Image (tube, rainbow, N blue to C red; front, side, top):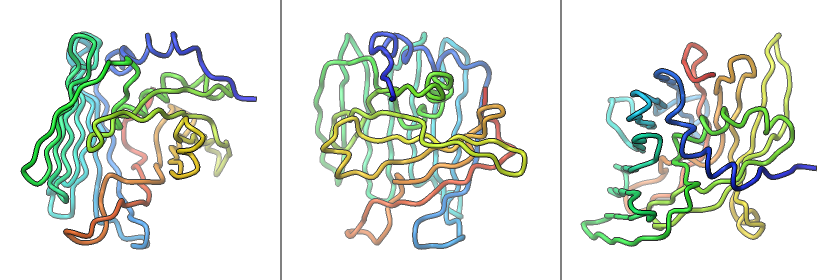
Length: 242
């Protein structure tokens, strides 16, 4: 039976996990949209840079011409998450989340219209680019069957969704061992509506090698966009690992 980590220990550690990562890390990969076969129309860069006093964790997706399509950038100052910037060029959406005085301040713009809101900071918000680092930091707990819970900010909704990560399966192939972890909504009702996403790590070095599921890239045409899905194949020579 899976057990959930103490919410107190999780909240305390989430604010420090990304900032405490040693050195810079840059990982690149190819993005394959569902329905496009083995044709990679986009590339992605997942990175963590800076020193412990000021770290930036970001994910940028570019097209074949090098144009940034989707970008999420989170800044950690003095071990705390201070601001998140999100940009979706296909739909023209931008969002900013600031963390001040125990509150999350949302600012969202679409089609020239902006709206703001705020809510209490629960101290367990994890931006999308930081999820692999959270997994790495909780590796032993996840392998032991524990479930790690946190919240992911959803800029267009100006709110955060509670999710959980758990170990799905492990296997060996050509002398290498792998672990697949599943991320899904914590709420049973939302789990019935939203498909889970998966992160695959090579056990040696705890290196991210694949992501499958919903993508921040949209499919379709302007005015008729739909959420994209597919997979990201990260290149073996990249540097996300312990």
